[in-house]
Image (cartoon, rainbow, N blue to C red; front, side, top):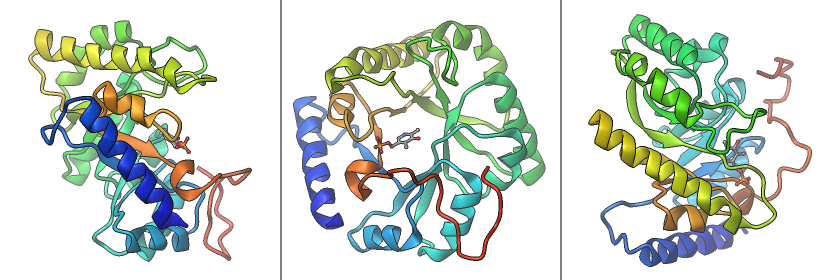
Length: 241
Ligand SMILES: *Cc1c(COP(=O)(O)O)cnc(C)c1O
């Protein structure tokens, strides 16, 4: 049952928050990663009190959002394509995966046209994996001035997806890297970066111990996604994005 899984996760989040000695100062928000799951599954979640969802495809989110109560809020957690920015900006309260200067510039430009000030997180490729999107820490240092000059972007913090690992404990060093990078940017560039988006179904407790403020949890809440790629409304033949 969804409610049982939610209870377990909420208890784990609370326990990890206490272990980290964080009290109520830096609350952890659960982003329920609902990608691939149908609106009915999200409605179950809403009945249990979940209202913050994470989606990674613009078309899929656009079809689901009108089917959920308007008090729900939506975070985009994937790699955003340039040709989807215009559709995405009005839908999402926070974009977790801003992964290059060129996409940041494009978001800023379109936000100005739409009269918006989007909140974003910069995605950091902490392990330097060549297959992964994101700024390497060195790239971020060199792009930072240009990023800070984009008037529309509200940079709220950093996000990372560590490399796949056999043991959740292996992710800890990458979470520490992200936290230390945040601390360095705050110190050297005088930025305020309150949000750290890190931790998924297998390693969220460790991420919280290392300072996560947003944990993105999918399968531990909604069950396995199996081979499902997206949910589409019946009768829709729109292409994946
Ligand atoms: C799918 C996804 C998640 C959730 O993954 P689970 O292992 O199912 O919890 C978190 N973050 C991102 C960026 C994702 O794409």
